[in-house]
Image (tube, rainbow, N blue to C red):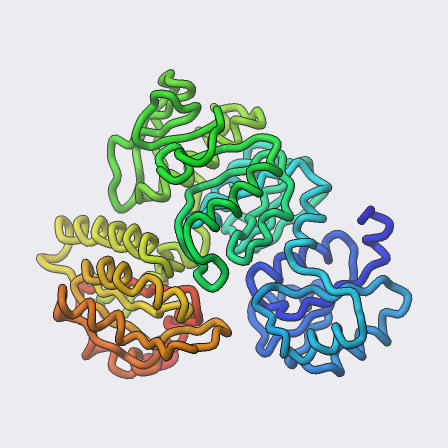
Length: 469
């Protein structure tokens, strides 16, 4: 769609409040399009969109579609959906009934990417963090970069920063098989893992999906430390945190603590510089290495990159410190896959170790986990139990279904029963209101509480604050 046609278009998003959909809506507003959308509740992102001129509906009924088609008669109207929108959704079904123009969200992002030199971040884990680090580096070093991601980037305080720039950092999603829609100048694959069991049956199908993405990338940047990527893909542009040999870019860590990471940076096996990075965790170091590598691939000066590393911050909901109540520290993390929980608990242990050395004799790591999707719990219940059991105390809430039908009658009990065999300090708690109600009985002073999940679990801090005020 060319610029003139874009300016004559109206886009209505069914489910506009989602983090990915709201980013696209904001991007189109910044491009000069008119935008409307619906969701069942308003949130920070819909409020931002309203301030920019979007029309927001807090219901999803056919009358919304009738309003849009009658109000914007002088524009080409497109109705945008994500894979989360079910066929029975009243707006969606009415659009199909009337043969209105329906676009999948991936088509909109692909359209926007075509107007930039696109750096696309893909992978099973770490996409939002890598997108955030790359966006920050390019913003500070080039002042010529836009971003559209699935998380809130601190430097912009937004999931979308779309301007008339040369570069676009785009987070692309493999979860529903639409990743083959995206064409990029540099395609980055962080890692490949089996996930999204509602769409993929096995790891081979996931790999095939990423192969489509790789085929559509002019240059490919790969994580050498990911065995699945290494065995199934080839590129002379790759990065590692375990070796500087046979890779284009490497940061070999010499110290990782709860506040920063120190490492030696190499290019093509040659030592370049020591780096002090204000982000802890080996998984975060991998994401940062990818961001530096992508920046170097487009010619960003290394001295500029090094100078600006001190400004790197994690995106929201990635080991995000939410506050302290009566000497109990609460962190939010988006971890919802066993391997993500593994890394988050490792990082929590790093924080506990430092606290034990400096402040307390004994601190506990308390894992508070909201499972996400019945299909994921069914597939990975043993792996969830294995990783969660490594916390000192574990509380598991009911499953956030994310619109899935629970055909197999899966409950969180399948996880808690398995955890109990390894760690007796585990309990099922129905919801976050119950956790809040019994907060002081469930926790003790000095606890580091990791609240993990991809559902509505991140409202916990607000619920807890309401109770304590």
